[in-house]
Amino acid sequence: MPALRVTDKTFEKRGEFLLGETSVILSYLEEILAVPGTMLNKDLPLQTRARTQMIIDASLHFTNRVWQMSVKKDWLAPPSRDMIWKAIVTRYLRNTEAALGELQKEMKVVPTEGDQLTVLNATVTAAITFITQVFPSAKLALTPGGDFPLCGELWKAVMTRPRVVAYWKEHTIVDERWTISEYAAAGWVAKETAKYDSMQLLANL
Image 1 (cartoon, helix red, strand yellow):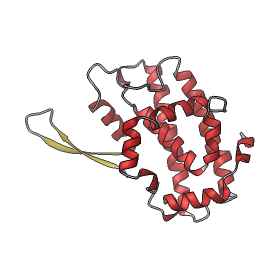
Image 2: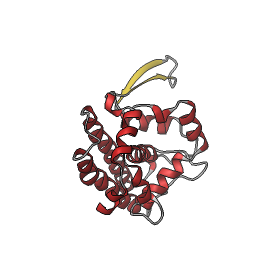
Image 3: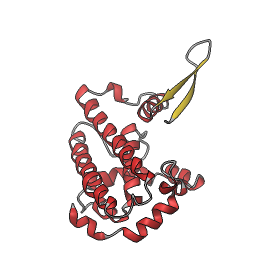
Image 4: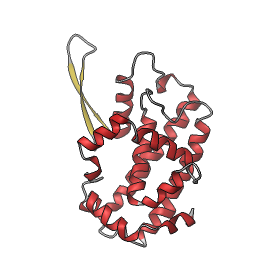
């Protein structure tokens, strides 16, 4: 389980506390790092907050569900690969595209230069980054003429930020494994993807 140890400086007597769970850590960081005057998630209307949380939870559930499959050596080979794409990935992308579209009527969902990244931005970007590493052909569906253009626009807006690009390069994030399983290592994923990825998967959208 991810954890974050925090030093509380808001009181005269400093203390430390430990945060667990990805969603809690991200929500804490989003608020504590916010520039004064930034509209926080807690300040949004209830319906908007609910829509936002729905997308965040769906993104975290999606990645966790697929990562659990990485304990098996053949998880990226057919028929497991086909099941992941048809039953999990396409459903996530379709639902997220629709949910972002509805949320966009109430707030900005695609960050522009200078905007603080949100938990929503982080969780959706992580999920889509994972998808594009396992299913590179899916990138075509994320383009303006594809099936999930809004997902692609959000993903690109985050992943092309200079500081994000620099961080990934400095820490060689692309070479890190997604889970503790040896079958989630970057090299293994790339090898299996090279064998099985196909543009044909887009025909199944």
